[in-house]
Length: 116
Length: 114
Image (cartoon, rainbow over all chains, first blue to last red; front, top):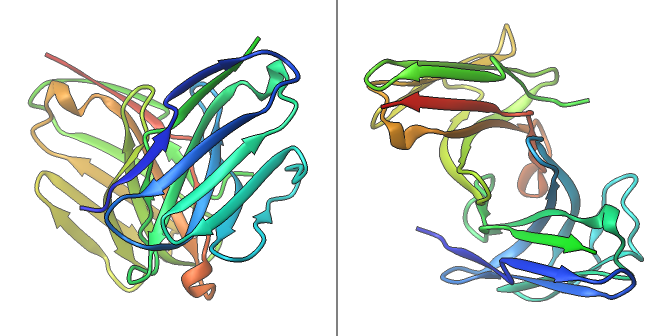
């Protein structure tokens, strides 16, 4: 089946620093990738939709200058949390949709970000 | 507000029993999907049911969809301890095609006691 990887799986950073999270589709091409944030024991909150070669579309309330998304190729999207603060600590999950499947999304294993 | 609302929020059963989880949603959909998440992990796609389908099976999973009631149920038969996880329903809205975004419910925590 389709595999999506995320790197790193865990990261601890200090307040004020920036952190980059990578999301890769390993065995398929993804024109669209999605970035979610999940708080403990809560649902997934869609942050933004990332389309290859174009600007990401952010959901209401998500700061695009704080959460920079780059979808440079059909297999890679990156999320950079800039000037991280403790309230940015969360579980970030990406998903990818392949060129063929219209609705099925394949999820990465998630990245646990802790900002100290 | 959440498009999908699952109930119960938590379910604890004995191994071998069946587990039934329900999901309700508010707007018209193209399809509804169920996902599973083990603690601290990403989501695994379980099954997709389209709006013109009423029931679908996959192994020990049975999903029903009632568009008139805007609800779906996920049945796991003969549960195993390894089925312990959180289960989410997600809806794809009608008419948005390939760029449709999924809206997730809050999830159901299933515990299967050995």
